[in-house]
Structures are given as structure tokens and as C-alpha cells.
Length: 228
Ligand code: ADP
Ligand code: MG
Picture 1 (cartoon, protein in one colour):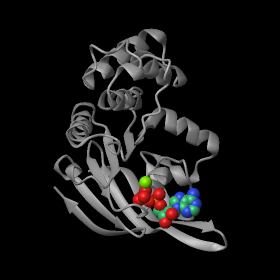
Picture 2 (cartoon, rainbow, N blue to C red):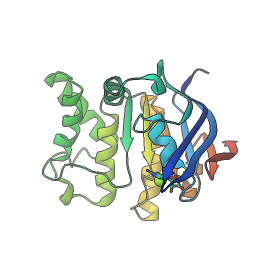
Picture 3 (spheres, rainbow, N blue to C red):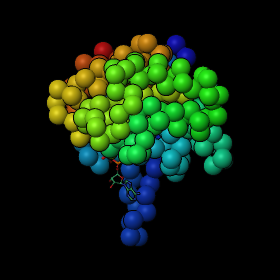
Picture 4 (cartoon, protein in one colour):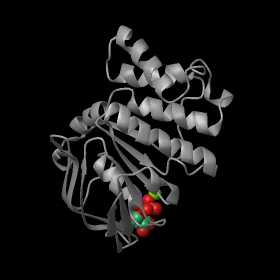
């Protein structure tokens, strides 16, 4: 199967107070379209650094990364902005929704940024909010929603533009166990229904049940790789 994300020999060294911190050391992996991959490892193992490098929010010190046809590690900043708007959805631990916007308006904003025409925007917004189970909550603002529902809005927002890839960094970090499980299950459902490739960085063991592959990072290196 064709890989949608390819990471080849990626290293990232941070310079901190005259000291070199190797956050990633020669990491290589490939993810096929429609797969869910869990990136596990304790705090400081390099998960966020790897997601940021794949999403073009950070640049590796060496190595190469492709998302679809694009070599992320070769793109200019303006092309990276374009790539992120069109092909990559981000979900973070804290949902970062606009507080005065309804669920619908939060999702619509992403489509406006991607210059999707108004007619299409409305249909797609309703489709993704229904997909994440918020059909009845579309006109509610974040403070009127539970933590799990807010994260569902963030997920709806991340998939609205039909990105090839979703990068989720500790998406269950602020949720209770049961709600966290439902969110992980939702990522699985989105991968199955929309064909989106999902990479989830987490230390939540529950993710294993929903992932096709589980990669273990330790001190910036991949120490194990398991397929479900
Ligand atoms: P994780 O997401 O698994 O907790 P990170 O990718 O955040 O791990 O961090 C990996 C390593 O890189 C850690 O040692 C961390 O302290 C270091 N690090 C991360 N970001 C920076 C930064 N901006 N400047 C310096 N060191 C950093
Ligand atoms: Mg992190």
C-alpha cells in the first residue's frame, strides 16, 4: 500500500543554554492511507516534536518527511501554510475553539480559510458535526458543551477540509477515561468513514485498541513497532 506519510532518518536537535538536546534521533516510519497509528512514549520522548515536524510546524535538523506528494522538509513557509490548510488537520490536548463562536461557526471558519464556497461550507459543516455526534449541538458555544463535546468540535473542525492526515497531540489528555475512549473510537471511525490517516501521540494505553499500528518512542528513538 502507498504511504501517505513517510519519515526518513529524521533527527531534531534543540539548542538549549549551550547544550544540545536530541529530541528525535534518526526516526523513520511510514503510514498508509486510512490507517490509525499511535505514537506512544513517556513525556519528553519526542512525540510532539515528531508531530510538529510532520505538520510543518517545526523543521528537522536532518532527514526528510513527505505528506502525500509534498516533501514537507523542502517546502517554503508559504507553501507549508497552504499544505496545513488543505491537507493536514490538527487536534491538540486543549481544543483551542473560538469561545464566542458556535460549534457550526468554529467549523465554518476553517472552510472559509480554505476558501471553500458558501454553499458547500454549510453542507460540509453539518456533515462533519453529525459525523462526530453533535448534530443536536451545532449552534451551541464551547462553554455550553462538555469537555468531550468540545474535543468533538475540534475534531470536526480538523476534518472539515477533508485533510489527508490528522495529527492529534494528546487529544485525550484533559478527558476522563470513558470520554477519552469515545474520542479514540471517533478517530477510528473517521479513518474508516472518511479514509483519513490519523497519527495520535499519547501515553494513553487505551489507544492500542483503536490503532492499526503502535510505535513506541523512547528518548527520541523508535524502540518498538507493533501492528494490530
Ligand atoms: P513529548 O511530546 O513526547 O513529551 P517533546 O517532543 O515535547 O516530547 O520533547 C522531546 C525532547 O525535546 C524533550 O527533552 C524536550 O525537553 C525537548 N524539547 C522540546 N521542545 C523544545 C524546545 N522548543 N526547546 C528545547 N528543547 C525542547
Ligand atoms: Mg508532547
